Length: 225
Length: 389
Image 1: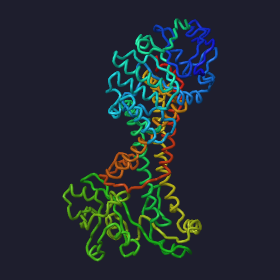
Image 2: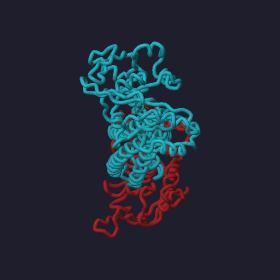
Image 3: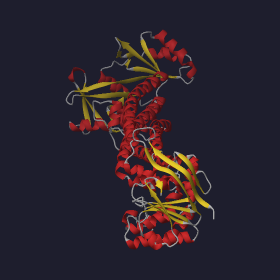
Image 4: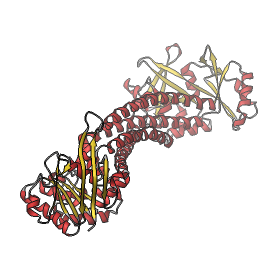
């Protein structure tokens, strides 16, 4: 199996050469293979989210090699990095990060706005995903009126709108109760079984309890341990 | 969903903040449009009226003041080649002392076909025979209202020389469309006007002439100066120039004030838009994380600015059109025309000067869009990881 993510000796330093200098990521080397379900495990402040942001081409590393789907995403200019993110990655956040005043259907379609895709295509795709996450009946409900579990399922549908091959999820169950956490993990597992690579930053034990073939990467104080 | 749909949704999301900008912008456009509508309508009506005026006027000035001119020179003027028609015009202010107001008395030669035609245009169903049988006058609606306040319902007594009252019947009220020029006026036969204004039979306020070949006007002016060297000669070109200078001056003063105020608005808007709120950073972070580029964020922010500025522009123009052309005596007419000695009863004729609105668009909407560009770029390059913390 080919590597979806390949990182070698990656470092990230904030405010270098100043009194506020902070080494967020230290000499990280890891790889994630196609079709794997991985978790980045560590306590708060260990650098999980930062590493996820670097992998998602939202932050540029100070040094080291980073390739996602064999593309040097950290060296890409903004336009190409954005297009890469849109076409290959799906982001899921701890706080859902939906647009509260938008309906569920509008939220899911948001990622497609820059693509100038036909409205009918956007709707069909969004409705299919809402059906998959069992939210089609709430398509016209505004996001602020959803429960926590529904918000996260809506966010998952949004992350999947471009049919990504890699899902990056940052603490997706942190704000959910046990039942809703199980629902989210079931959806992620189902996607993984269909070939999507999933990488989750979490400190929640539930992933290890529910997923038998889980790859766990431990991170502590910005370094892989 | 495209950028415009998305922008309209996010505008609704921040309704209170955007509503303030919309209202300010609309107010600016409303004020500017009202001024443009008023100025262009007045100018257009004035130009129309000036087109109907004679080609040359001769007035007699004494110590810079108008004095009656001897109409005997008309015979001499008729002999000038190129002059098609010469006639006298009589007008002057009559002081209505009880009301402490001035009434503009205008004498018209009703036997002149051209002048009779103009009167018939001002007063539908005008019966010349009945009008000339007695001392009659046509009055403006404003003068009618003024006279009625003093119980002159059907007639008015002009006090002429030796304190003698001269009774003149009110024949009717002429069309309000003429009020822009004749708001404080009454129209009567020339001989009657002369009697009321204290003119001798051989005196007139001015001598008017029609010159069909406009290229001859300068030559004729030179010849007129030989006939009557101390007179003031006014050509139609002079009349146009004077009216345009007057309104351009007032419009220029206003535009300077308006642009200053608008720049102030832009500075305030720019400083607000430049400081990105926490919620704004988060929104942009989410969008960047799900695949929006910096360009996409700028397109979205520019779409928001376009929606606000276009809708405000159209709303301001539409509201001002309704205000100026549906409501009489709007404040902008008073700014242009100043206060008059009688009640103003002026309804402006709708006129849309497309060039002025194109200029207004370019001095408001374009600077607004430009002032949005930098904050949009600045917010789009903000750290997108804010969203996923």
